[in-house]
Length: 322
Image 1 (tube, rainbow, N blue to C red):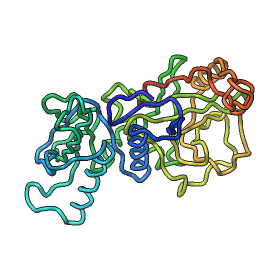
Image 2 (image 1 turned 90 degrees about the horizontal axis):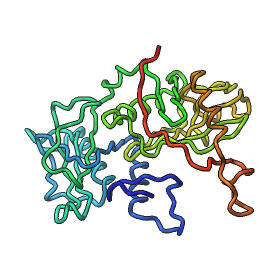
Image 3 (image 1 turned 90 degrees about the vertical axis):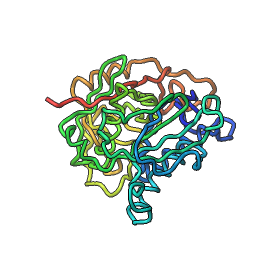
Image 4 (image 1 turned 120 degrees about the vertical axis):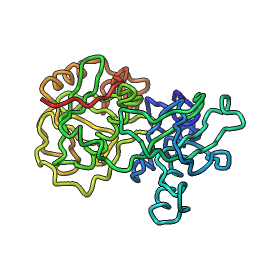
């Protein structure tokens, strides 16, 4: 695990620790995922202290354990405001910006400060909110009021940019409306950072079956419940992209052949273009991981096969459909 700050991490494997002890970084990542599944997305910007006026909760008097707790505090304050439980007047507003001082070496005695603010002129992505002062060590986030800023992307395709070619996914809201909304939300939020998707990757190639990958970045965890969703296609045709494991993300796979065996078990959210299927064919030819021991389930000749080196999908964008 590579720590980008004390509040978030990147990982090329599972979130579990090899020695059975969960680190603070892993625990914080798990909290962020749990918040996302519950509908409280915590979009993260490193080394920024977003600045808004009025200040709703002063960080000098409000400390959080980690990024997840600070983000959750902003969402909780919003719900309190919706119930009419906040003060009247200038400070009686709903939180839409939070800032957490995360790095103990840079923050020093300000470590753990969690500021909740309101920006009444908040612009949608790719614009970033105003930042304040020396930002090193800070992690900030935004809570948008609604999804009106996503309407401009209604006719856009989701594109993964890889070293072997671009993978273009035509989104299918008629099959997975909630998943498509989450993917648009995530891609729009990554736009100010050139679409950098830290943990997006492809790791499983299986000829005559599928290619599997993952969509995740610090603060972006695309996962929605499998149900309720519209009925799925009983024949999952070649090129259809679906969530793996019968869930709603973040692991996905593309069908390399027409399949009937899955029935209605998997939620499908996109279709790969013909050009993208050629990219997947290239991925199927990449070297596989070798066995390290007889019972290695991730080695060559085992099921499921794994790439010798996982293929990063470091950039994610929304491109206008033809």
